[in-house]
Length: 82
Figure 1 (spheres, rainbow, N blue to C red):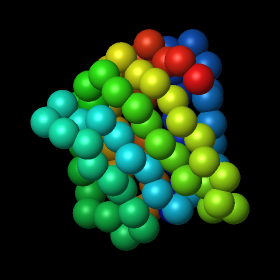
Figure 2: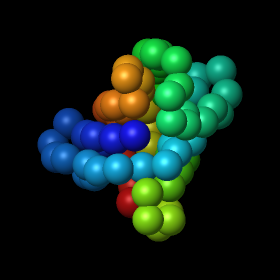
Figure 3: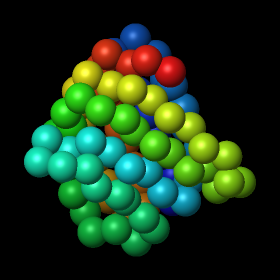
Figure 4: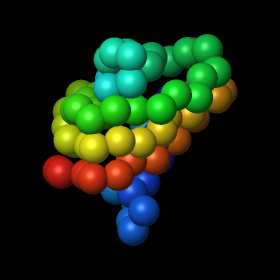
């Protein structure tokens, strides 16, 4: 599965991942390979990305959106602290 992580001013990360955990507005959820299509608003919290090689990446965000379709994840986030 591939992900693109974008903030309003730059591309933060793009590449192959195993999973991503995000702070949905009604609670945290995880996206794995072959996840059903979804578009969701994100609240303040932590985004945890597990890259395909096993490396972990964590971002603190204020808000954003996630879109999942055909193993492509688009993460649009604001207020990022790496």
